[in-house]
Image (cartoon, rainbow, N blue to C red; front, side):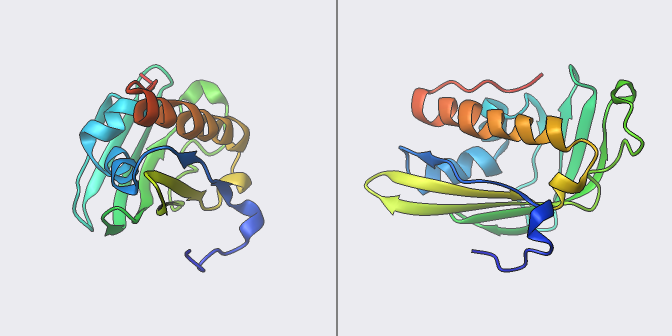
Length: 158
């Protein structure tokens, strides 16, 4: 586990377990085909450390651009948000509040074809969008990603 967790009360965490291998979980998180199966159909994914990936949600008027900070196949993926924008209709004072936050996906092999995802979105709980963003992550990881991995069909956002 990553020990660099400044002000942990502001971090949002989830720890779903899946009945699939760590390799399958990682592939769903770190490749364009995987992301399109559970998060958004509108993305461009760089698989290189230092590379930039963009994720667009036209129906919600949101986008995020992430720089990959770390990538250890089947184990760890870490992003830093370098650009983002919520839809003007949210009324948020800071429409770009994700910028500077980090997202960490740590995948653990539990044996027997099972794995656990330890997900942290650093500083998310301190942002104005916290309520909608945390419920979004909960749905996306617990429902959509699970559906893709265990049932073959996720519910990516448009």
